[in-house]
Length: 286
Image 1 (cartoon, rainbow, N blue to C red):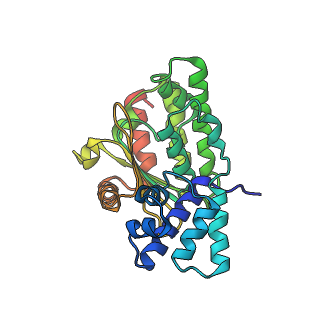
Image 2: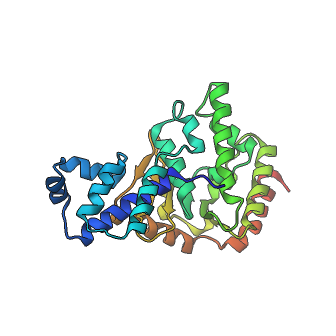
Image 3: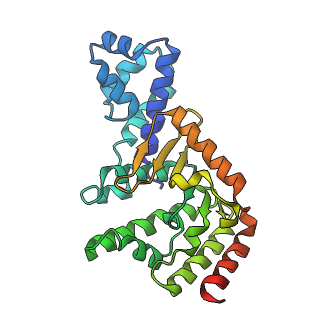
């Protein structure tokens, strides 16, 4: 039995509540006045900042004029699902709250588009490469082991070819930056070749000979979700603290356009083996 994904359930629920409110022709302030709530409570429910009780959900659905019992029951079940435990919940006491949200978004996405200017994406890393990268940020051995464990668990998302799809564009610097030594890099580059052969994975490289590109400003990830009524989410990597962007369609569309430009610029996925073989020859004389 597949356990519900609480993040996916929350995104579905809040998108449907927003749609029903707009369909009823009500503003958030009008909803608050009708139910004698604060406007901030309505906003927090629609943004997913707080959960919604069955009593409050029933009141919202009645106000919005939803008389379809089957649909109402689906939304009530979705509300219950938001309170389910997920595998990443066991790390809430040790990991940053924003990173926990990142894990939930990744697990509920149907498609991930990622540009990486610095390192191999976590979903594609070997254990040895992951350990070499994470050791830069996690000096404590227990903390390092936990970080590697999380990274390996995330990769299970790609095991089902009908599950998550991953489209990556990597700057050539990612392939040339040696992490963990030559043997670790050889294994990692071989892993990229293998992953690129999966039907749900595409890996392109923006090579140095193609000059400057928009991705030089920084790495980012776009999460797309199974239903059209859910806005994309963006995760932007930054030196001090990564930024998570949600509920901002305009900014999300800007990142999508940037990714598509990088995709057009980069070498096609079918050229990945050639690009990697050239790097291996120049870096390691192979």
